[in-house]
Length: 305
Image 1 (spheres, rainbow, N blue to C red):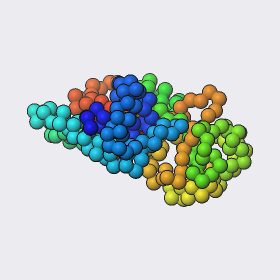
Image 2: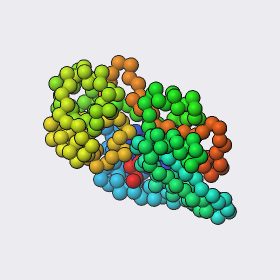
Image 3: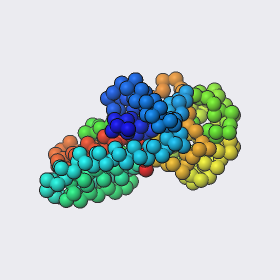
Image 4: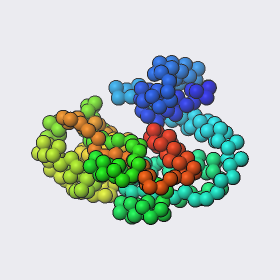
């Protein structure tokens, strides 16, 4: 196995498709496809199932993935090691996070940052939205990470230098044992008379017009992920989520549930994951380095966590 093959395995496992992995790794799809097939031939075992929607790790592939992830992580650490040995920067970098903006990357980002800046104190705190804004404006935090709706994103961009980390689209969670499981995507017409389970009424407001098309019946609202999982996995109801939510809540999205894209006319992102930097204050070199790491790891789903 080569280092490139290890990176390809990790990239495809994280992204779920060879196409997206190729974009993130700046190589051709054929390079990844041929390299993975060659490795499978050499090992005599299949690493990925090829499906209509992408690639899924086999049982053997999951073990290979863990080894490849260790290789890639160690190589990244080796590359960062010389800099960490000579980097004498000290100080403090603080980040405020509202909602669940890319929490899954905290461990990876923090670990890589510490290897490069071992003498810099790193503080990452969860705040409510108003607290985060106040803390950034006061200088208590160097920058913020948040998930917002489109209108809020535009408003924030007038006051802060906002960088888009990821966009999310509506998806529908259905049971693997239900009649909708074999679909590649769903339309509102296919969901007519279905019962829904929703995390909270305010989240539902962002797609209420879509639900109206399905003659909706809300079975219940709940922030209890076990209860939501039970209702969907038993095919008692369907849920509405965003395509990034499975990455943040593994307990909810177990093998009994699959999420499918919801196709509607004029389909647009339903939320935006952004970083927020005050325009009237220059960022320190260390804060800028942390933000760049965050952008780098935002490309990958946190399958490894």
